[in-house]
Image (cartoon, rainbow, N blue to C red; front, top):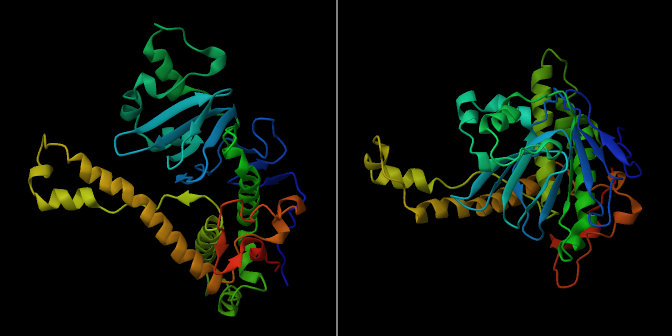
Length: 336
């Protein structure tokens, strides 16, 4: 029977092409223990990690090499895109929606006219070529729009150096170890012993009856559910949309907000839509993690992916009630 990869004692994990991401778990520092360095090579199909937020600790992101585009949002009118290179970093507050990606991925998905309208305050030039105050803004725009894209982007992610945030560093490493390993082993899911029998039989059908395109799509779908099962054990809350309060408000007063030069929708309506994001995220993670655990034989974390030194990091910390289905987190470890 197929077994999962033994990555518990590995210091790095590399995903195959065309993704090509490389996870390094050895680049720690006194102010950022258990930091995870993620490298994204040129021409990688990875668009960075999906947007998410943390509710228990702040996150520090540092660019080591290459050029990165980041997004962060703390409310309906406080969303910021930033662009910077090696040596720069930023901290995301609790409940701050954020994500990062290679700069050229942003360039591919954003029109040239939109890029040229980017405000000067929204990005920073590389530290080794900082522009002196008063330089032409077109030079900065050229850095964003026409820079070299053949470099490897490497970022370090960890809880912030704050004393209270550092309590979560071990959980942070465990999350990314299992995350990278789950993506690495995603093609193995249809043949694992804990996978429901109908799914295993489905993947044994001839290619003529079960084309490779559909196989790949289904594996990606199962991986997305497995990741939600993983997120349910950690302080990781992915973006799953928001309730359409703004659209409903505009329809209620149709056609006032659909005309040229329409007034701005009231802030309280926008705020309601923004604050609905946590509700949807918690609900969908709860729903699909339940489906993954009870119907698809998935576990939150796996012994094959977890070093011995991290096996107790999901124990409840002082003042924290951290249980799932009445079973303490350490019991969530499952070996296939």
